[in-house]
Length: 105
Image (cartoon, rainbow, N blue to C red; front, side, top):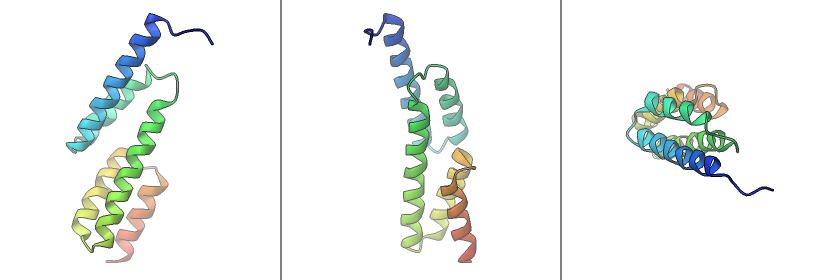
């Protein structure tokens, strides 16, 4: 494979920055802003890193919701499930958690 060009390197750095921004926004529960940052990052992505990042964050939100449910902290679990719904409403993880939340009421 050919070595990366300076444009490739610059694009990679911008992508890294966009992913870092999206992560910080998620941590601050600014879900819509995080999704916009991720959408902007897609233009820079040549290796599927945006999709991997989105799956990783979905898994993190799912794990947090499940942990809250296991501890009986339904209101916190619901909050995380709502965040996941804003982040990735079509994911099977969101649908499963939503079903679990409503079935135990």
